[in-house]
Image (cartoon, rainbow, N blue to C red):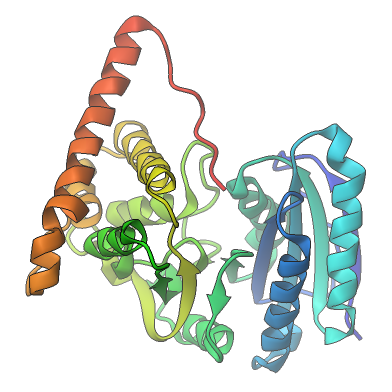
Length: 331
């Protein structure tokens, strides 16, 4: 019989609640499903039901814990967030899984991740994973992810699925796909579908960076000579996501990625690790480029590099003028 526990509501802090379910249940694997009250609730519920069905078919499902986290903006939205979390729990009630739910007053996804780690996974589970509410995991992907975690050597600290960009019929969408493929992001687990070893030191994630940027940075610090040797990215099945549809949204997303990179470089990495992060993650050189990739290089590589440099100049100028940049909101 699945154990259902209510953890509603809960502040965005990291205070551990050790009684979220029966103390006798110690899951080896905790999978977080973070979402937001402002999301398309019907779509989110459909994704969650699909995820629960995949988890139910996974080996040793009794050792899994599904954690549903609903984030909301302010106290006025609290009741609606609690109701949404309860409806999501009801949607998977018959799955036979161990389920826990929480409502968090926060706009930062990493708060949900840090809560799941501090309150549940740190002292109980070997692995903590999370899957975004706007991605599609190909059939068999969840089972493959769990199997890979169980079979991973002890020095492997992160496991993920290969991400596949679904381009829209626009030039900017295709350019963003080329840009992401040019980055080192395909070499380490992406934050939309990833599992990390609870005791490996990757968690908690600082609130001023994104989850996948932090994972990449920690891999660099763990093994600067070969940063991605401590991670596994499964080629098949894949996790699919949509690239942005318009040029303005593309620029906003790239700018947000680069703000994240500057915070990581200047605040969280040593000088030795900064060079590796720059060469292996931010601006990785590619060999064997196709003709199309060579032709798109000025846009997919040249323009983003100029953006990165100009953003750095802007940050420097703001520091000199004592006009700090607003806190970037990670979704």
